[in-house]
Length: 151
Image (cartoon, rainbow, N blue to C red; front, side, top):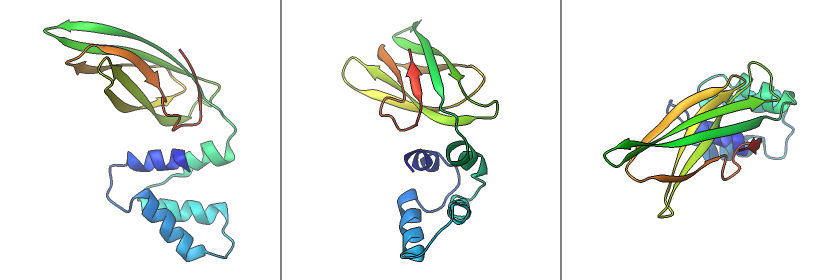
């Protein structure tokens, strides 16, 4: 459910938040039996879009992504910094995709997290610019997504 909640938080369409959806689903079905298909239908109705790809990956599928992260912190001049990232997914089917949190940590203890859609093809991207030099880049720092990470 944690990964579905993460996906829910990133949606562009208005609708109930994830906890409201789960609460309503529980109230409707408390004490009864519910199939996976009923849960998917209710989630899609509340989410406002198809989630079949998500459930195909995480309920019916067996892939466990391994993400390899490499990066470079660059000084863009005038006190501005960027992070050049390359993230490769292994052990996943060609159509596998998931938004994965990338956290940039700074020397003062602050951090900035962005979600990047990662699939089976390597992703090369740039984050920033930042006014402070990043100290470390972490993929899935708080383990919100089921995966393995290799630096």
